[in-house]
Image (tube, rainbow over all chains, first blue to last red; front, side, top):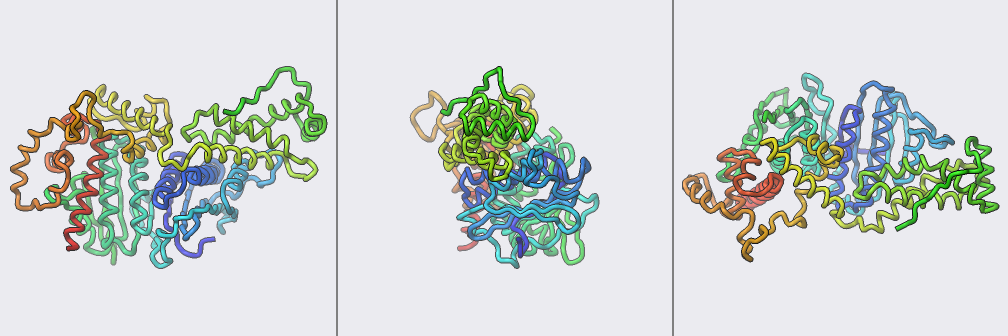
Length: 279
Length: 265
């Protein structure tokens, strides 16, 4: 089990479209650590099973949190899928293999190591380990991992992305942003802009954020996407925007967004970037 | 290609209860009774189909996936030992998944861009252009998904993939163009460059942008100085919006690297 904070954490609602985010995140990880296509397929299918279980069974039809964490070690990729719902639905050895039971069999077959446990508060944790020869270069030392909770925001967003080291976000964040912008009904034109914004954030976030990690709360509205980046050192939000200036082109972050706002909260601040696609 | 599992009508065995299952396995594994095997196949085909569906997001046609899974089922029927006390299903799942994983490994999944994915990305690109022309603005992912009868995740993956596909030769010369590598889709933009001479006199402009190829430089200016949309740039340059997207991302990366290098000197 995990001894230190994860490299990636997605805090989501247990909706089917959020499983797409989890799958895109895994593809981004695979690209970062050069994971073989068939190994990625195994991981995606196993993790999808665990997430689908949370979507379908954990909250008995109600909405509730779906948390997915990824831990990289020098030779492994581990994924923890957590819910706070009703617990494991079926025993893995149930003879007739209902939907839940079949999923557990699939996970057990595709993951190199599996552990099921209750999450302490009645929920379920499924820990899956996969072989990943090249994961080492991006595994974080414990102190650098994204353990800091994000700042609470009004309106309690249900989609939070946390990635560290920031270099790992280079292949993950643009993918997630495509899926998020697609959900906000953006046109492909504006989706591409959102993708360029994600690139710019990853390129310039270092130095502005506390620790080598990027935490983003996402608020999705029809044709509008809002990214809350936190915690930033005081004064660094403007600096982050300033650093996105490229020769002769201006501040790329400013030009790609429709609005931005800096909110100070104690010793940190949050940068809010809003994109819309009015067409 | 593997042969399909055929199920003939007129089964002589019922396959309802666990007792019946034991009997069927005895008839198949002991007497090699083909009707018993068919009854077992019919009984476990829903399980097999359900497992094949797990791989349905890959680029392989579902019928092929189902055939591979069916081969796994047949192997499991041959190898299952009822004496061990486990359910057949718990034995069959790893056997069927094992068959599918082997199939994908043999298909060369280590290749970064499977052929089916490439084809899908091209379809998405073409549909994107078609729908843009039709509506006057670029489509949403769900419009693309609906038009191509794909799910939104497949479209998202295709949008992502087009960013990586040098192999698709998006930058290839237009059909009929002279054999000159400088004449590509970016041709016809020469007059645009002149207009930007004024901008180039701006004192803020330093060398980095000069290192980006002229076509990309012009596109960057259209997006960030003129603030055209990517669709407008695509129309002006005569390439697809997705290609504009890829070139802009790539040249921004290039610019950042150049700027970083310059500041480190």
